[in-house]
Image (cartoon, rainbow, N blue to C red):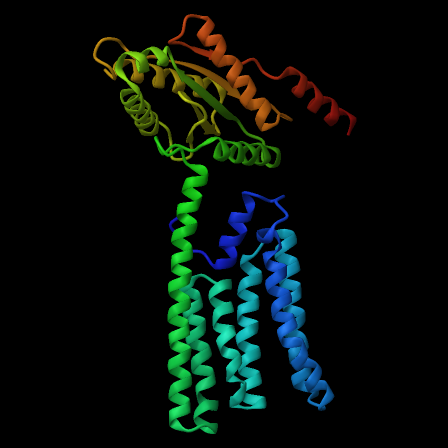
Length: 355
C-alpha cells in the first residue's frame, strides 16, 4: 500500500468494502461522468447550430468518452487503463480546441487539471499537466498579451499544485482507512474482514490454477486464567508477542489474522497439509519455549486444514475450526489435522466425470 493511487483508484478500493450499499460511493463514477457530459453538451449543441461542425464533433467525442468511462468503471471497477486513456484524451481535446478555436478556450484547462489529478496518480498527473501547459503556451503567446499569458500559466500551475496537495492527502487518508478496515488495532495482524477477502482470493486462485493451500488456526490455552491472574494489560502483551513469534516464522507469502479474542489464523498458500502441520508444530513449541508469564508456560492449540477442491472459504475455515477443537479435546497444547471434505471432493469428481 505504499504506492500512491489516483482518486478514482481510491474510490474503487473504498467501494470494494461496500459493493451493495447503493449509496453515493457506488454511483460516484456515473455522477462525475454525467456532470462532465452535461457541462459540455450545451456547447456541443451551440457549435452545431453555428455550423462549427469540427468543434461540435470534438465536443460530442468528449461527451461520449465521459459517459463510456463512467459506465465502464461502474460496471467493471477496472479503472486504471480507462483513466489513462481518458486523461490523455482530455488533454488532446483541450489542445485541439485551443489551437483550432482560439486561446479563449484555455478556460477548459482548469477543470481539465482537476480531472487529471482525480483520474491519475499524483506524479503522473503532474507530468501530464506540464505537457498540457507547454501545449497551450504557444497559442497564448500568439493571441494574448504578456500579462494575460503569465496570469494564465501561473493560475494553471497554482491549481495544479493545490490538486497535487489534495491528491496526496487523499492517498494518506485512504491508507489510514484501509489499515483501520483490515487490521487488528492491538496486534497489527489482519482482521476477520481481511481474512474473508483472503480466503475468497485463495479459493478463486485454486480454481484457476490447482494447488495446495492450508489454514492453521491457533488458540491460546486457558487465556482467561492468564487475564484473571495477571491482568488484561499482560494479556494484550502476550497476544502481541505471539503475533511477533508467528510473523518471524511464516514466509512472506503467508499471512496472519486475528479473528477473535485469542484466536489467530495463518493462511499458508502453496503449502500441503503435512508442511502446514510441521509449521504449526513449530509455532506450538516456540510459544511454549518463550516465558510469556513468569509462573506458568503459555501454550496454544492448533488445527490445520488443507483446501479441498470445490470447497468455499467458509467451509475451509470451518474444518480448521473443527480441528482446533479436536486439539483442545485431546488435552490442549497439541496440533490436530482436519479430515478432508469428502462430500466436496466427490461432488467435484462426479462433475468432472459427467463432462
